[in-house]
Length: 436
Image 1 (cartoon, one colour):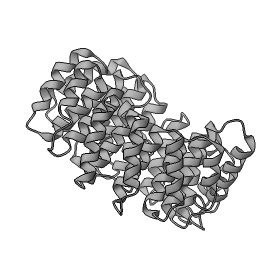
Image 2 (cartoon, helix red, strand yellow):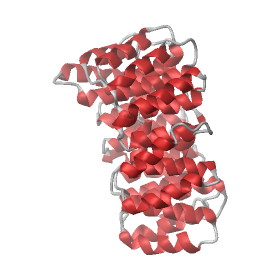
Image 3 (cartoon, one colour):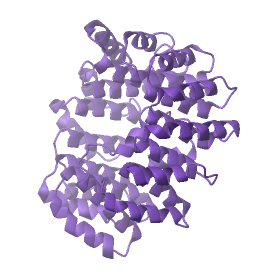
Image 4 (cartoon, rainbow, N blue to C red):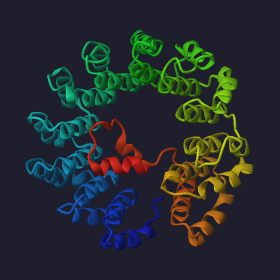
């Protein structure tokens, strides 16, 4: 939240006996920023304990301490030399966040190493964040090279370069036409990101939409590509394939294709504001026997379209313990489409009884409270955080307070994961992403 009074409280946690607390304190100092946070983070950059150095580096990146790039780079080079790829990958992400062109040489050197795909994947991500002509050439070289295990990461990173040349490569044999599925999926999302930023060329943007629609409209041929293409069309706001998506929802045999394909189609309709799909979405949510994940996304889409489904209606289907995914979506959906009268429902979801399998329901309720934006939640949340007997309830009440008070549309720490190669994650980044 940027309150400088937090510094001594966070700094005290750098000596906590629990390493998870120490790691989170380093990241929190990075979010807080300021000269004192910078010095504390630099002081932990040389640690050889677990993920401490990587978290310190990520904190420096979050704090925007560009002058710390040489120190982070030295730590990165040392981790690469020691073949500690888990730490080096986190340090690479930090170099990308710091955005210094002087780090390109060190990152480029990793691309010449034999093997070590996880490290190379995160080096590609960092190059995409740093930008510049040399980074672009390096990524194009990886995409065209023989190392197909890393090509997908290069394709994803090229989404940061809104030029005609990267777009054409991503549309070609090395991108959408690649034999490796992950490279194709990464190219799909990179093209979606490139689309809106392409300088003054309607023809190329139309070509991108046509290519994505062609993949999205053929789920029987490859349901993975169809699902990802549907999401890509939704993110750029294109309705080119919406008739096909509506047909998927209205088909009597909704098991014809995989539920992931149907879910992606539903999300595309929600992202493009397709009001004509509301009745079918509601029917799917309440239709027993359909895949719970599919019903979950349809409920989320109703929230995107501003159509609220009440918590009491969901209870008729079963309790949260039997339908955790659906109640998780309810937290988001109520936050998106609800009003002040729905605060009680979100607080109920936040304090749902059950074990760790219901943490995602509580987490979604915390986000929903933030989306709702009703300051009347502060009092009840403080009471839960102070007095609830269930530790998880107290923790998620604190998370809900943070989301309620932070008016930015996206948590800043989430920006670390833009263009993250999801199939090649070191434990630290995987844990952070799961928690988010």
